[in-house]
Amino acid sequence: MTAQILDGRAQSAAILDRVEREVAEFVAAHGRVPVLATVLVGDDPASRTYVRMKANRCAKVGMQSRRLELDASISTETLIEAIRELSADPEVDGILLQHPVPDQIDERAAFEAIAPSKDVDGVTRTSFAMMAFDEGGFRSATPGGIMALIDAYDIPLAGKHAVVVGRSPILGKPVGMLLLARNATVTYCHSRTADLAGHVARADVVVAAVGRPALIKGDWIKPGAVVVDAGYADNQGDVDYEPAAERASYITPVPGGVGPMTIAVLIDQTMQAARARESARAGDLTPAGTPKR
Ligand code: NAP
Image (cartoon, rainbow, N blue to C red; front, side, top):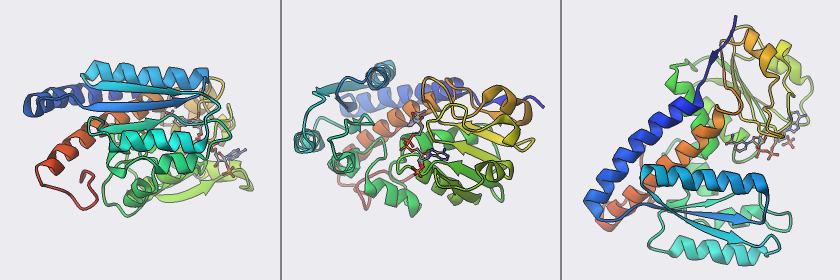
């Protein structure tokens, strides 16, 4: 078997086309353009590229992006202050703090300075809890993108065994919970897992979210499994692609799979945030101030 490609470029383009139409409607209705604020701390070239790509996608759909660039040596307090200002700024609809931040910064504290109503990258505890309780709100962007990609190909999840490799709070953990909400049976693997190969070999759906090139070997993949590779270390995925593609039914390429979907979800959720803020202004506030799905 040679796997069918889960084409994140094509599917993200479809999402962005829809958002572009929604932005035009929004501008016509409200006389303003949705605004995404991006915050980059330090000079990491990869992070700089990701922020630039996100700003480019904003421009493509007719949104505005506002870029805040801060010195690599700033303190947690300074970063929190800057994010709080964006949270309070009436012109800003969504806030993205590019991950990872330099070591001296308490990243969790910085994420929590993002107002939940502007947490379009889905990184706050509030967004996580709303996702876990299946109460709408903003999804962590990469997990949201993975689910949108799986759904675009009508891949059934109920009753399937999904193995998620990685358990970070913005990727592995939430994607497992979203799979669980779709009635998959979910196993989490991580750095202390014994017999990773054995777990992966029993999976109908594998989500790799580690950051170690080719950690997942092709001959671990159960024939016919769906393979989603979120990894992006040294420009490579976590899955040894060629041999895995020989066994899988569907597989994401790296690049061109999960990455573009992540950005599309961020832009889509910025649109939702702008709409929710206008509804709130008009007095139609949903319980947590964030959009219902
Ligand atoms: P992270 O916070 O470093 O988490 C990595 C996870 O992998 C941890 O849970 C860790 O386990 C686990 N792990 C490490 N070594 C392992 C091993 N040998 N076997 C099994 N599990 C192992 O990373 P992250 O932020 O979740 O990102 C993961 C990858 O996704 C990175 O390559 C990143 O670049 C990529 N990423 C891509 C996108 C995108 O848009 N495509 C977005 C975000 C991240 P412990 O918990 O036990 O330490």
